[in-house]
Amino acid sequence: MKKTIVTFVTAAVLAVPSLSFAAETQFSDITNHPAAPYIQFMQSKGMVKGTGNGQFHPDMKMDLKHLNRLLTRVSGKEASLTMTHRVAVIKGIVDLFGLNSAAEALTAEETTALLSAYNDQQDIPDADRKAVAYLVQQGVLVPAEENNQLRPHQEITRAEAVTLLAKLAQKNLITLNNSPELADKMMDAKQTSMNMKQGMMKEKMAKMMAEQQTRIMQMEKMLSTMNGEQKEKMMQLIKDMKAMMAEMKMMMAESGMMGQTGQPHPTGHKM
Image (cartoon, rainbow, N blue to C red; front, side):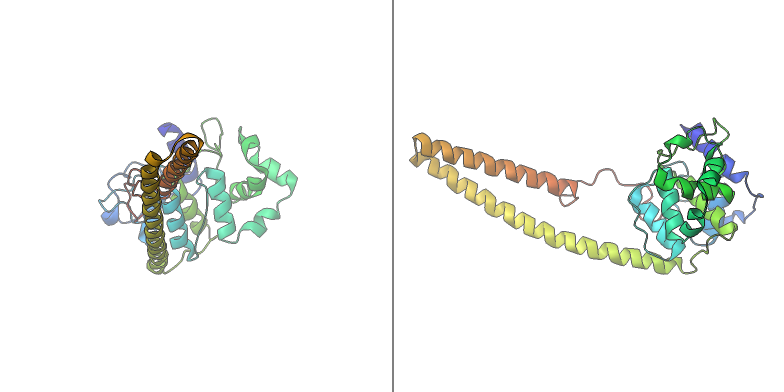
């Protein structure tokens, strides 16, 4: 798996002349990584900050939260991608930076020819083919040396995402936002607002569940005064109410309202 990732990035690095940057800010875990020049370039522009402990984790899969933060920082516009696999990210970048007109101008024949080097080009969704072909045409994407595979449905890594953006900037296909700090503040403000709304919703849900639990306890006490069909109906009603409460708890857990958010991302909020 790691060999595949390195090959993908190596092919991208070989597409343009090598670059050199001051070593003073270099992340400790990218020294021998093929994407190091691109990561350093983006770091020098204030677009990437790493983990806060001097590392970047280049081969880690890019999660959606950090991908959108990176794209917002680079573009200066709020990014809202919903998927992190390679072709979805490529299409998202092409759309976000206004490159879709140039991509759509490619003919079907040109698109097929540009993608023909990839053995798995048939796996690229129709809606994404021109975006991928356009980046191939511009030399941003280069067919990977290992089996000439794009692996379109594989999740993109941090190094791959940064490499794509760096190459687009170096080829003057996109302009890097000159106020990445402002973009961060915008994202932080939005996250704070979402957290506040979620907190209010959590309080309302907790109140509803407490009231429901009280009703169930009252109904269970009433069972001792019932018999026959009436008791059976009450027992079924209590059972249904408990099932509904269990479902509500599950929904809250899945949405993060109960603190079950899974393992923390090692990169924090920095990207």
